[in-house]
Length: 511
Image (cartoon, rainbow, N blue to C red; front, side, top):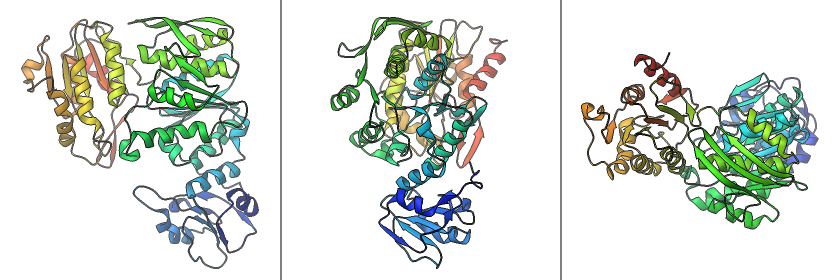
């Protein structure tokens, strides 16, 4: 993400876009590169001093100057060396996004852009819309939790929504490679931190809102306020559409604020409404009335929450004029979403699934869906990430215990926390249903109900697989598509899907 050497940005154009509070130093010339990390500053470049939760970019201005920066964008005016342009702004992140869009030629202005926000469902909806747009003859790029991709160009995602500089560069590369559309997951952090400034959206989608990221937002009202900004600040000024799931209470509230929204859901008030819903182990089926007729939807996606995801994708496609036949064709061609109720094939006659559910609401949605399939027994493997919202830990434990016969509590991404301490905060929720931990022998009983703590994740997955009986359902929740585990400051390779296949093979249940 450093290929900026061939570009130049006129200083006058930069000042015109940023409309700064104060300017000092020379106001003519050009900027050769942009950076918000002082270690990436190059000679003649512009450094943006961003305030972060753990560091303040203003403390690195001297380092940026030593690296050759000739322009500094900051929120606190300070005296700079002669010949250096100082630009004081109200919000350095907003300024970075504006400058990045200008520097890379506003690539989003050349794309049909759809943004998806909400706690759960974003990734699945982007995969569905990617398939529908392809069926409609479009060339969509996707920015999201799993990857940033267009055709042969693919990067592993570092964040759901990258920082604005990387985002604009990636969009520029995709657009130059032939992309004419964009489907993007937009996180609450990205909205709060102005990462998507400079990207006009033709469609904005709201999925739902449940407790998550409260370590950052503090309150649900603040969390909702961040999500709301997608519609108040980033929808293109004319001809744009708001797609809102009104089965969610926050969605219903949002829809009341934006007249003309393409509301969707099971509610009778929804403009795009699912009828005759059938849920099975093979997927979901329902009918939906569109402007050009009734569409019979059949999808291998499991569960009622995926009905909501499908409706959001269908409503968004309808909003940009894609007809029902094309939508249906796209849905039939949609690929499975990595780590979202991803099936692990086996010969044990058990349903083994990996899912990214890492909030109480997401886990409950998944488990209620799976219980509807009437398995012999549900075995859940859960954990919680370290250095993240601690309030959800007992909630995750309670929900897993409520819907499962056997709960195995293990380590997720502990980061700098002690895994045993994280587990200790999960257990009160589990122990509301299962008072005492099962012994290893008892937990291996095919009819045992209760919980078992196995801190090492590989061992926990191996134990869960060994406990499987025909007709059982095993859900491994939390990490989904992730192929790593973060322990301390180390990012180690670890993929739940690989581990499950290895354990199944060891037990003779996978060829």
